[in-house]
Length: 239
Image 1: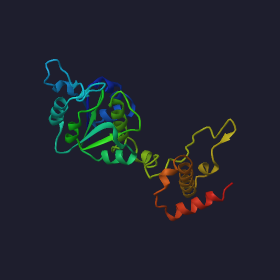
Image 2: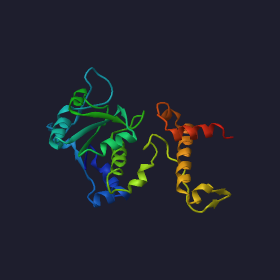
Image 3: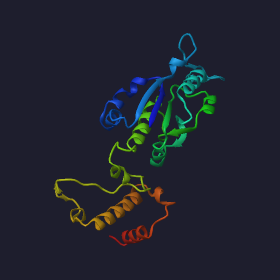
Image 4: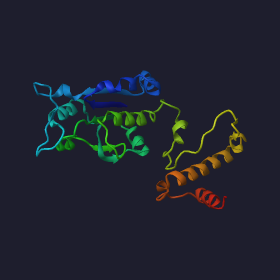
């Protein structure tokens, strides 16, 4: 897979590419990551990429020409072009899974007061990482790229992300490690039993419990399995 980030500030991504799992994925050629500065494509003699908003108002608006020309230079038939903007669809785990199956993902980072509206005619979709506004799209691009890269074959063990929060529509169950007892707080006995069926059932139950407590909205349209129904009934009768 190839990820291309279109940005005015490529240096934002230096540490991103040089750290931890992302660096290992790049070193092992499991993903190709590049940044392209769309200022390099401006035809303005002063290298401008923005101008004042038509109709007046505060701030500066990114111009069509540099961004569209940059897109045309890097895009192929296999590319998915994603604009990072607070107005986009909220990025979710299922979105990351969909993106991870693409051959080429292009992430377009905004800045200033945003994009000239006509640039939207040259993209495939808009993504937001939440209901807030950043100084630019670079932070959001790193979030999206990180979430996608970790799902690629060989980057981490597949089992490590199969039980991630949201992977199956539920929050992840509680995790424990040694010591078995810490300041009087013990690891649940079932996790030490070696009984895999009981452990699996406990984890599913705790995923349901945690989702019900922290993100009940995730359960509103869920189609529960017979086992999940039984576990939910058990929880209702617990003290």
